[in-house]
Image (cartoon, rainbow, N blue to C red; front, side, top):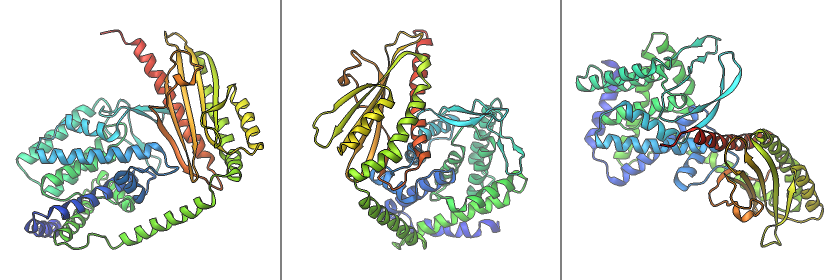
Length: 469
C-alpha cells in the first residue's frame, strides 16, 4: 500500500542496524520519554514546559508557581510509560484489567475536577483512577453541538469489544501494524471510557501496539495539537485517512530519530537548540529577577501587601466553609524571626488578629524566617472524632519561599503544637519573590487546600458509615 512504502523502508533500515549499543539506546529512549511525557500532557493543557518536565523527571525539581496537579500528572505519565515498557518486554496479552491498571498508574490517587451538571451549572466530580466513567462525559463542540461518547452503561461492553477486536487482529492480522495502532487509538477515544485521562491513555495504548511490533515510541507534538484534533474530527465525520496519515507521519519521525541514534549520529532535532536556548534565556532572566528580589525587609513588606494579606483573607473564606461540620474552631500561629531558634509569639483567635499581629512585626522591622498557621476544628458533628487539624507553613529563604501543609486528626492536647506534626506534609507552592503576585494563583492554592480538607472529612464520614467486616 503506497501509504506505508516509506514507513516500511525506514523500519527495514532500523531493523538492519539493531541491536543498538546500550548507551545509544538508553540515550534515545530517555529523549523519547521526556518528549512523550511533556507533549502528551501539554496537549491536555498541562502548564509545565519541556525544561520543567526534564528537571522534574531527571532531578526531582518542582517548577515554582506551577500547580501541583500538573507535577503529579507528569510523574504519573512517566510511571505509566515505564510500566508499559515492562508490559511489552514481558509479552503479556492486552486485557481490560491491564488498561484499567495503567489508568490507575497514570492518574494516581482519586481527585476532584471541575464539571457541569446536565443543566449547565458548575459543579465538580471525583475522578477515580482505574474505574470506568460513572457519568456521561460528552463534550460541547466549537459549533455548539454536543458530541456524544459511549454512555456509562455501554462503556464496559464497548471496551470488551475493543479488546476482543484487537486480540483477533493480532492473532490473524488484516491490517498494517501502524494502521492497527491508529485504529485502536481512534476507537478508544470514541468510547472515552474514563472520566479523565482518555487522551493520554489513547496515546499510551497506541504506543504499546507500536512497540510490540518493533516500532519506536511515537510522540505527537503539542505544537501539532490542532492538526491532531482536526484529523480526529475528520475520522468522526467518516474520513479516517487524515488521522492515519498524521500517525504515519509521526511514526516516520520516530523511526528516523532511532536510525540516527543507531548510527551514532546526533539525535538533536533541528529545533532542539532553539528550545534549549529559550529555556536558558528564561532561566537566566529568572535568576536576575530573583537576585533583584532577595528576601529582606523591603521584600517582606511587598510580600505581605501583595501576597500574604490576600492569602490570609482567602484562607479565612475557604476554611470557614467547613465550620458547619464541627462544634468549634480555633486559629493558632507561630512566627519565627531570623533571630529566633524556636517558634514564638503563639496567638489564638481569628485570622484577622493574626494579620494585625504580623503588621506589628513588620512595623518593628523584624525579618521573618517562617510562619505557621493552624486551623483547628474541634468535635466532628455526628461522629465520635476529636476533630481536625490543618497546618500551613511558610518558609522564607534568601531567594524563594515555600508553602507546605499537613492535615491530621487532633490528638491529645491540641493546644500543644508538638502534637501537630509536619513529618507527613505536601507542598502547596514554591515560588521566587516577585514584583507582582498573581491573585488567581493565591486563590488556586487555597482552593486546592480546601479540596484536601473536604477529602479528609469525606473519608472520615465514609469510614463511619462503613460497617465493620
